[in-house]
Length: 430
Image (cartoon, rainbow, N blue to C red; front, top):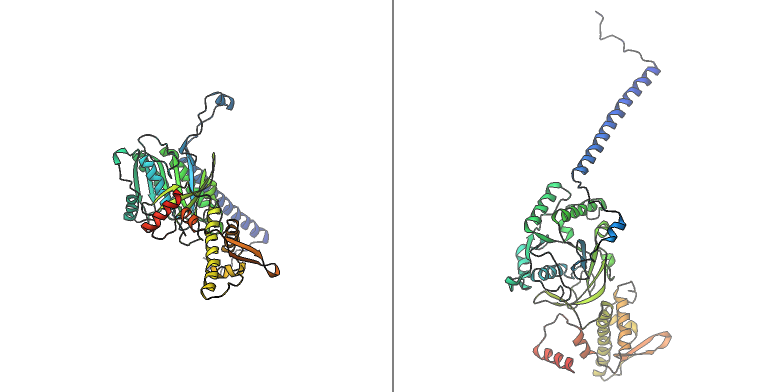
């Protein structure tokens, strides 16, 4: 028997080695193809398992010959039946307060913002899933809104789910089924999700993940026969100062919406609102509501459409005009209190007095606001503008005292005395 230890390795020519390599490569390619084909088939089967055949339309002339009902609104002018509403709110504007005003109006059969009628299926309920507030806080806020008053007259039931820390990992099939079962068991016609960022478990900047999540929301709405889905979300900081503010994160969320509500206040981003005024606009399919002003009652957490003030641009001009007026008035008053004649007060001096950089000229910035305030104050006679040296502009106090008018138009966050309230009523009567 030959000694294997000393045996020589078999010899392969270059051609034989090439054939071996090609055979191995062909085997690996065949294995990889089978694996990819299996993955593709599995993906298609998974997609098909969640697919429901859509209804088939008749030929369009046949359908047009039939009576077509007009567009029905769940919330008058603001949200058609079957729509997806995306509420985009600036930080500190109070998006949850606005959402709660909506659900309370639905429950009680009141007009939303004391203006917009609501029409939902009789006997249906509203499911409000809050992923941000602690449960007792949500109950206390709703109690402040008097949701329990006149309960026997309620038009719809309300379920408030406090799901902080329980995001929805959609499109997981068992999660989708659970939500559908919950909504159907409650006979809910409206599902409100607040806020989007806390309700998701994926990267909010991923369009692919957001598309999968919103597709699952659409399937839930169809399977549960919802009349309305409302998702509240935070705005991106880059859209501050605009009427139509952009949602934070993936743009796919705005692709998904049917209607967008933009909600802002008069202050700067991440700052406490300077007054009790808020601003709302709505746009989308069959919806075009320009920005309008809301009055906020902190004691009741109640929002209502204002009948005494105009849009945000004019309101902000008036608010900054008062600041500009105060700066010029204080300058002159302090000088005269010392027995001096006030020195000329230039535009740059006003900026300095208000702590606003002269170079702050970006859109929505304070520099623009101060300039608009100066123009407004001059146009109303609060200030007088004259030409100064080197093309400068000089400002002095005008003949019109703005304070009585401002008291009527603004509700600043300061406690009001009974005397002040009486003065306001007397001024309004005049």
